[in-house]
Length: 369
Image (cartoon, rainbow, N blue to C red; front, side):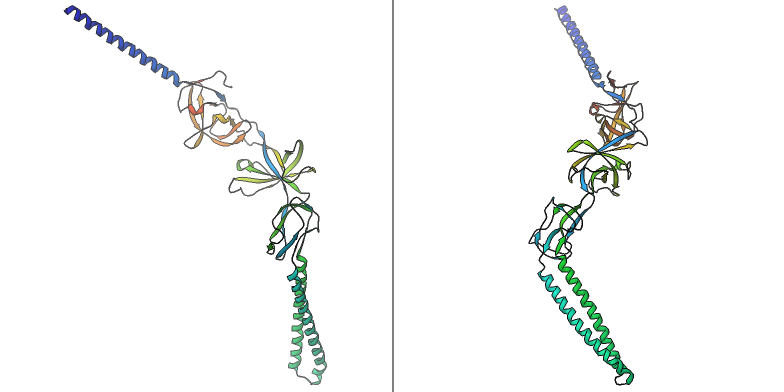
């Protein structure tokens, strides 16, 4: 009986030992599996400098070079507007009219004032002419003669003032009709018949004819590479196969407060008749780089602590290193890197969101040299 109990104890010991071995083997297998899972295969590329010159392409809108707000030089009630948006106007063409009733009454009042001033001037002149031969004979005093001469001077000044007032009143009547100073196209209307306007308040906006250009917005990192007179190739969205030559006429001296972009105007050398205001255009400008930047795919850039980073691979140890970079805009082939990388660095181009600094990786065979 004792032998049987001893045999059972030995069996139990061997069973426990066997379970420990199996459990240890399972833990080692699991650890090996976890270690194996940490080594991620990655796709990488070796950096090469970008091309020294490149082409900037932007969308723009056909705009007039000169667009003026046209309004009356006097205030009043609009009784007629003869043009609408899109109408072409010629020099001297009537645009709108004001109610000139009060202006004509003011003109009549100024005319009456001028007539009275003329009469006073005539009386003063006659009195002075009568006094001139009497003064040497002593029939009037020197003081009386001076009074008549001063009255003549005052009457002459009053006449001049009344004459200028009449001219102003007459001009005001003429200002009640608004005519076009230049030929152009009406781009907007801001006043309607029956509306009471103040002097100078716009009635329409008029784009000067024959002077159209393309307006584009340039990011600040690209604006420094442009200059006045630089060549630009343009095309209209309505006629994409027709290439138009132009040049940069103007670069804004200050960035837009909201978009932080610079307004650039492209003057087209020979605009076709099909080029109309408001059309969409494409502008291509070729620029030279002072130093060739690095370009990485968009998928190679991620963010860490609010700053852009890429993962550089050590080809010998196959370990990734998180590297902060400074971006310099986008191109057709990827993101331009201003600093942080060097020629020959191997960067991970896919799956960067799963990596961490110092992680072991395995380079795929299809990575580009």
